Length: 433
Image 1 (cartoon, rainbow, N blue to C red):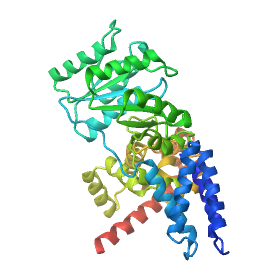
Image 2: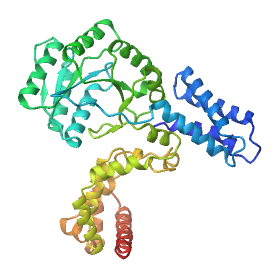
Image 3: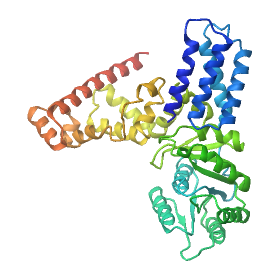
Image 4: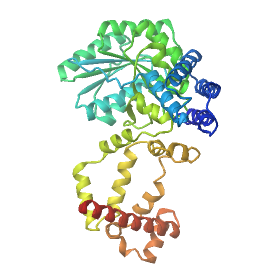
């Protein structure tokens, strides 16, 4: 995400990284390029102009012209201003209530139903809540069915009423159901339209008035850019929602919505959807997003994702196996599964500083481990447990079974051995330190 914007901003700073004398004209040229970068990312023109005017004022106030490294000073000023533009700090969802009621709003196709499932999954697994999903879209049976499928996948009940076309009544009945079954969060998925219309607005307003939600969330597709911001404004004028959710931020998004929504509606972005998986939902951190936009990576988020997936006791067991040189292909397969659970591989790697740019034209998808897994699954349990027994005939059989070549099998075995040696050395280093 934000690849284009990151690249354009980096180019705009080049003029200040030269050895020549820095002047107010140079700064003006750089900021003109920054403004073009923002406009190209589909940021509202007024916001882009105000942004660069503020950056210029702050940069000159910080004596960027006489700084030893003016390019770095300018990057810092732009970074700080991006953070301010996107809301400065992360804003949590309000789930205080008995039960807490969360109302979803947005256009059809924005990802409301999927986000409802993702949110229920997050609240259940990370916050210890007992959510109830409510199928409030009475016009699209497919939306009700989709919510039921999502609910089944994450082990969360879904309340629906077949034949009832009154979403207000369904929502109120769902809240009664939650109270009687001990559910502490009610997430109401509502109907969307292909465009904003009066009937939809009246309906969602009526639901909000009847259920008095603790949190009203506006879900918007980040790939729609400036249109997303205009829609957010219209919804906010009618609903006064509490926060925005950006979905599909892993797609070909230019970033305009993320950079503009806060300034236009003065409401925080609370979550971002970063993939198809139900775990692909992140709290929105303005500072971390600014880091990523400016190519600085996001190590904090990467570590958090890793901590969520890796069990401490399992990590200790693995450490002991590595120390005794007993790490085998079953362990290796387990590590691959854990990494895949963390999310999109290319997106994860782009969180490492400097990697985003390096991976720009590299195609890494979620099937990156497919060949490796096929080779390991073609081994017998004994071979996985003890790779030393893999002689020539066994390797040939594995290559045939996995649809790969003997060379690919040999390469994996060599990489596996090198990894084992490296892990052992690191393990010894830790014990001696």
